[in-house]
Structures are given as structure tokens and as C-alpha cells.
Image (tube, rainbow, N blue to C red):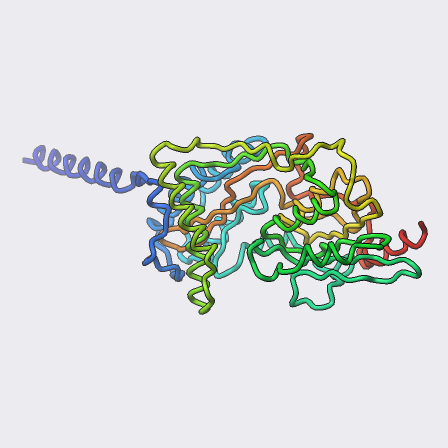
Length: 402
């Protein structure tokens, strides 16, 4: 009798272990799981069960392994180390604690676009170690901080300076850019120098930066980014869809009108996702035409001094704009190192299913012509300005002396 009882207990134990293993078995995620539905709530819960935390981590690892554009191009073994670190995260009871651990893990990857958001914030570690100090080498001299750009003539003795300020790079279709290039083209005549003030520029869409560079080169120019590796897996394109959906949801919440080009962009992203699912797109697109001129082409646009003012708060598209001028013979950069938010771009979004933590995931890697890697280092200026001094005043002193 005792033997039968023991056999029964053993059988029940085996069944319990098997059931437990099956319940702990990670879900097989698909690209469809990554796409947030129109009914998905983006409200953060306060608490999280250990099982929910495990599922969220598994979901994030899937998104990174299949959709992150930098996964093959990070230095060393930083990607595999972060995956291992994510798996070791303890299972906190609050979403705030969980977010902090996730973002600290992601910060181990040298990619300043890759980050986790909870109620609009990143982890304390990221904030402490990656501070974008505005005004260390003088504030942007735009005058009206509510504007995105300004173009005016500043006098320096008998010299006329075309002062151009750009504080951020909204989408090129945005109406705030109305008259920008025309204003620069008109005012640049009979000037002695150009000062492009990019201090504090928070990035965005670099199209207008490239347009300005072409105007000052006088022709299509060669950009020092030689290749861009753009992931086109279904998972990557699902992340791209999410970014636009979240943008639309935010505009609806604020009662703002949704621009037609955003609606069109969502439609295009859904179409590309469908093509990727059907195997009609290569899993990676390699772009080699970012700038179609030659380095040896003579400058036919502006053949006088150009000074670019930059600081630690210059990020992403601000840095791409600075890079565009690398081979313009008359350009000098003045200020301090930029942020180093450069190599990884075209950000998509993942939303963790239980915690609702948002993960910004870049889908593209940009390779410099000489293979330099400046993420978290930034561009070093030709003329270094000490903290507390004003980069514009330094530029004007140089111009006065010449």
C-alpha cells in the first residue's frame, strides 16, 4: 500500500514538474506580436508580477535580436553581454524599478538612441552619465527660443556675418521650415562669413541640414558616411509602424491635427511590413549614395569662412549636419565635443506587453568612411572653447583677426 502511495506521489510530482516547465517555456513571439493594436492601452501599471517581468524581458530580447539595426555592428561582444544582463534582471514588484533595471542594461550598449522610457524618463544612471549640458559654451543666439531657425545679418565692424541658427530639426515637411532656404539664399549675398549656430540642437530629421550643406557647397556633395546598413526584417518594420502609431496617438491625445504625410508614412510602413513578411524585401538594405558628389569637386557655393558652433547638446541629426560639412574647405567648427549620438538612427518603438515600458530601438547603422566610431565621443571641434566662454564670441574674435 505504501509503495502505491509513493508511486502515486512520484507520478504527481513528475506531472507538476512537466506542467511547470511548460508554463515557464518562453512564448514563441512573432513580428505581429510587436505591432501595437489601435486598442492597446499605453497606460503604465504600478505593479508587475514575476511572471509578467519574465515575459517582458523575453519579448524585449526578441525585439532586439530580430529588429535592432545595430545588432551586427556593435563593437566587441557588447550585444551578447546586454542580452545576458537582461536575462539576469531580478523580478521587481514595481514597474518603476523594472524600468530602471532595463534601461541600465541597455545603457551598456554604446548606442545613445537605444533606451527605455517610463513616464517620459530614462534611468538615473543614464541621466547621470550622459548629461546634455546646454549653455556650457554659450546659449544658442537665436533670440526667440520659440523658433526653430533664424537667418539674419550681424555686423562685426565693417564685416557682415550671415548668422544662421537651427535649434532642432523637425520633419522637412513641417511648415516651420517655410522660407528657410530662400531666406539663407537671399541674405548670403555680399556677406563676409557665415556662422551656423547648432548649439543645443536636439536633432530630428536631417533633410534641411543636408539642403543647407548643398547650398553652401554649391552642388551635390560627398557625405563622409559611406554606407548605411538598414535592417528590413518584419520585426524591424513592425517597430517602425509602432513609432508612427504612437506619434498619431499622442497627437490625438493633445487634440492636434494629424499631418497628411504622417498618415501616408504609416501606410507606407504597413506596406513595407507586408512585403517583408512575404519575403519581397532583403533583410538588409545597404545605402551607399548619401551624397553623390566627389570630394575633389570645387566649392561653387560659398567660398568664404564658415564657422559651425556646436556643443554637448548637439545630437543625432545635428551631428549628421556637422558631418556633411567635413569636406567643405572653408568650414571650421567651434565649441566643444558633440554628444556622440550618431551611428545608430531611424528609431522604431517596442512596447513591452505587461509593463508598457517603451523601448526606442534604432533600425539603421551608419559607417564612417574611415571606420571611426564616435558614439558617446562626439565630433571634436577645430577650435575648442572652454566651459563658460561663448563660442560665438570666439568665432567673432577669429573673424576680426583675419
